[in-house]
Amino acid sequence: MVITILRNLRSLLRSLGSGLMLTQARNFGHPLFWCRLCLGIGISLAPLAAKSDPFATLWTGSGSDKAQMRLIAGAPRGKGLYAAAAEIKLAGAAITYWRTPGEAGVPPTFSFQGSENLGSATVAYPAPQRINEQGLEAFGYRGGVTFPITVVARDPAKPVRLRLMLDYAVCDNICLPAKSVAELQLPQNGTSAEEKLIAQAAARVPIPLTNGAVQKEIVITADQAAPQPRWILTWNGAATPIDLFAEAPDGWDIETKKLADRKFSLVAIQQPLKGLPQRVSAQLTLTTAQQSYVFTVALDLPAQASSAGTK
Image 1 (tube, rainbow, N blue to C red):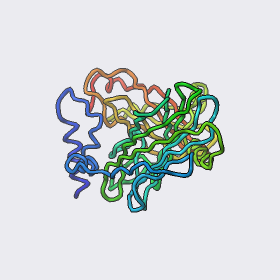
Image 2: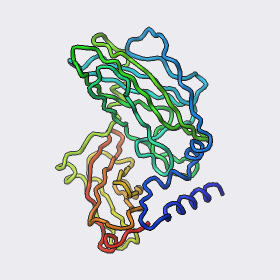
Image 3: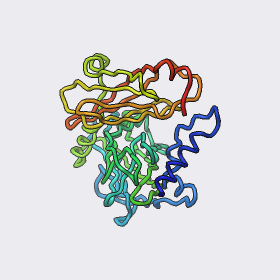
Image 4: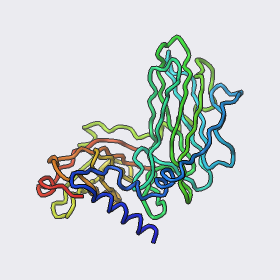
């Protein structure tokens, strides 16, 4: 009953306004949205405390919290170059979300404002899982996740003090927004006990496929008879694929589904109401047991779809 109401609400929101593009319509029906809107509560911030490990901060929050976060660092990679990571620990069956959360949820946001001598900090996202969350499909992580961060100093001769404010969502029956803050002065020498954890997280980050590899290992055909824009993707790579995730431009929502061992469907379940191009560019993430891959494809729209948009 509740799931039916939520889905009907999402459909209603999509239909509002003839020229409106509801890029996040699906999020409005999820308990997380209403929790944030009506209650405005979150996980409290922990004070920054003294610690003995120069390569890791203390965990934020307490052991009874559904989620805790800490900053960790590896040994310096070169003059002014560092490997760090934000590690999130989730209790029980709690989940948090990928940068594209699926039918419900909120992606994490990383702010490094207040850092010292920071030239750049680039966050990498490990490949997600497809999770059934109260009848809706979410893309994210269960049990915990570590986000690798590549840090470049503004002045290589000086140390970097990395300050991270991380906003993310934690769901376990109910969904709550979480906010964690941690600071770490990245050591300029020494050996880190966190090297293995950072390496494991980096290994889960999808690697880009070259254009040549895409042409060799990916075949995409349009389903001209489908009522909505639909394509079939066939993977010809050596590894057996597990799942496929699509990230589309604003105004678009492309749903993926595994059809067979090496075949997936992609369906445009939401697109702009007017001004459609003849093709749409989408970033795809394909996961296998050994390695995950990310690549961009141009999906040709059927003539009837490109002449008139659908809700």
